[in-house]
Length: 169
Ligand SMILES: [Zn+2]
Image 1 (cartoon, rainbow, N blue to C red):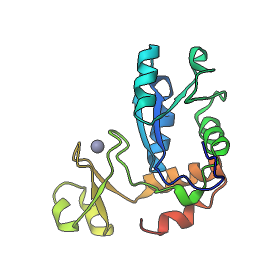
Image 2 (image 1 turned 30 degrees about the horizontal axis):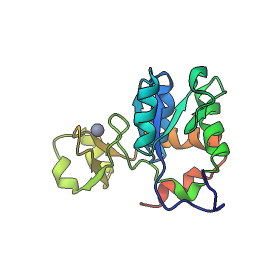
Image 3 (image 1 turned 180 degrees about the horizontal axis):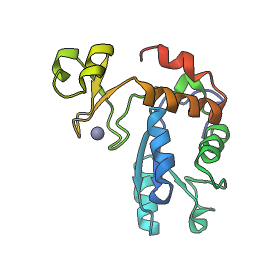
Image 4 (image 1 turned 120 degrees about the horizontal axis):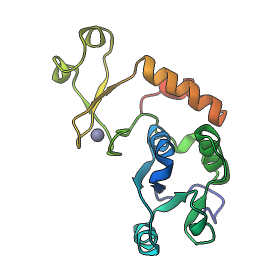
């Protein structure tokens, strides 16, 4: 993956087998482009590879194929750790909470006033930064849910996620 031993200049693109849907969500939390689809046939696999995506799967059928990252761990936290470690992904590549967790689209920062009647009152009163998904119109903000995710992520990766969440990307 990283022949030069350094950062690849192209963004990492993942195709996560739908059997690993929770992993796809975590890759999106990290800000990676992670499409989640079934990989039933060799044609599926080749299609995703042709799009420059690394196919992440636990299907032993694809284990020896090029362009496949085979996951051995059983639980989601270990699976995330396995992928991050094996691929040498560092915290500098991470853009935390920059993607829609549902549809994988990059979020856009929006003016606070534009979400006035679309978020709960207490959120509007206490939060200043909002972003919106251009695909599903979902509104995102940093709150207790993202703090929880950041803590989980810290346990998975050993990174100091807390400090990363304070830095706006
Ligand atoms: Zn969305």
